Length: 76
Length: 492
Image (cartoon, rainbow over all chains, first blue to last red; front, top):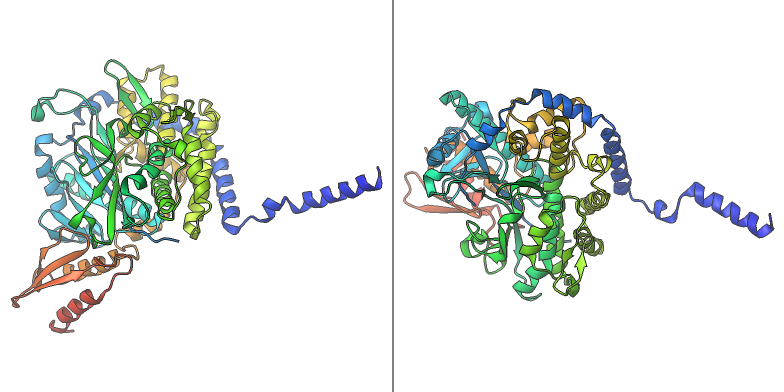
């Protein structure tokens, strides 16, 4: 590895360690937002399909009657 | 930075009430507030059929007497709007539960904007869809020195079309002999850009003039965005106010929509409404096409250049995050799942889709149509309400993205936002103690003032809640009145 290449590799290593300039500029709210997103993504790992099945077993099946009887006038 | 008063007016649907007796039933439900229901933690002052709650909100029978309506107090913060909207749900659940118990009824309350059937008894129409309102109110400083009103609105319209990709609550639309899932139940009813009424031929923006401005109409304008629908989840409610406020700010601060983004708003709203996976592009007036998300990003990027408050900046990040999620291929369950508990229209669709797959049911199956409505039921009973069930499950294993805490919602039941609503709330609290023995409210149908008559004195007193300067209201008239009442009260 040439001297120049060694220097570039060292710089890359430092950048990697410190993060990109954009990352360094992260403000506290941005960090918080990332934390929120991470938490939400992890929550998504909760088995939603299992949850839906469980809910499905609880709800009453009377929809036809329900739709027919939900009669409203227009408004504003 | 630009401060703005905002509020949400919502008409609710009632299940289990004959449409002919709706006005009478709504009056009876509301009249429970008359005496101050301590056991329900709700107190209010009544003026005719209007009830002003101690949190500064207004509950009433809407103009045609067909819907129970709750209007939040004036807010400056988007989180406050969400908290006040959720507090309204709690107030109405308590009122309806109490009424059901007393009258041995089984009325359910729905936070939605559409029913599939119109009554054939009342107007001769056998079936069809009918809609009612969810109005976002914005107070704007008069802007004639910036641009004309039509130009102002033209700058906003593409946003009002494209925001339904995250504000829509999802709906199964009837196409006569078949059904299709759409982004919003409301979009099909919007026929023009602006108007002064929303009972028929509904516009995107309803302009309120004169006394309806609820502020000095020489200096202020009140716009109501009526093209969106009610949301159950907090993110869409937060975002619809934040994004439209920022778009208003852009135009107020001199920004102009790139000319090539102009579109025919009503027709493109209807087109977008049926594109639930956001695959198509909208047609622009210049003959080009553009995706709804890309139009949203034009506003988003422009808004990044504004001098933002902390709340606006955090909200803008939420806006961008949601657009990023919506940019993924939503036909893939993995991507759709990421928006479960974030947006109503994706949460409802994932739920319906899974149910249809499991039972091998078509979209037109009665249980699926019913579930489309049951998502919107506000009830403590998990057997009746999909919304209730989702919330119970969320307590076990959280998946719903919240904007406000349960404590903030509880506080919003009795405490107003720190806006001019605070003066009204203080007045209502005083009136709950001293009216009607000491004074009578003789006019209180607008938001900016109340007119009273003090017992034994032949004079009228006006309490100003901030008509001239709604953002910096003076407490003087209220404080003078309070002093007068307390000084003449034995024991004070």
